[in-house]
Length: 186
Image (cartoon, rainbow, N blue to C red; front, side):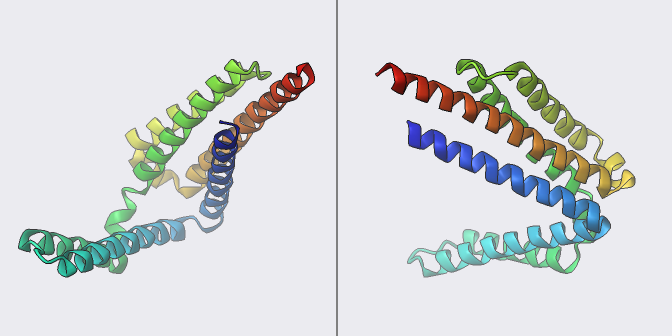
């Protein structure tokens, strides 16, 4: 259990740090980040399509329907790579969904903080809920974020990352206090 908690804390910290870095990059490179993210999504989709196509073609049965599907997926990824502009409209939605899931995870971590009597767990919970609300706004008002620019999305990502670092750090500290107290009692 203790090792699992360490893995969760490490994973949360890495995601938070990467979120902060992405936020900084969005502020620094603004519109260039939209195209870069759209191209990365295109590459990922193309690679998935190619891998699945190869796997399907090496399968003895290799159904024609799946072969066609994987060719279409690969073509879609390559199209996104070559023509990222239409995809950029969806970037705030994707970021909003990421922030919602990340916020939900920090809500879970905040509730864990309550279980271990972490100080300021209420502030951690509020911060986590605020992240979910911000993510919902990104999804619902994606057009506004496109016109407002990437700077605001970058700031929101930085907030989300810092919030997650705060929550994870507080919960981790409280768990260490409980562990050391339990050792002292033994």
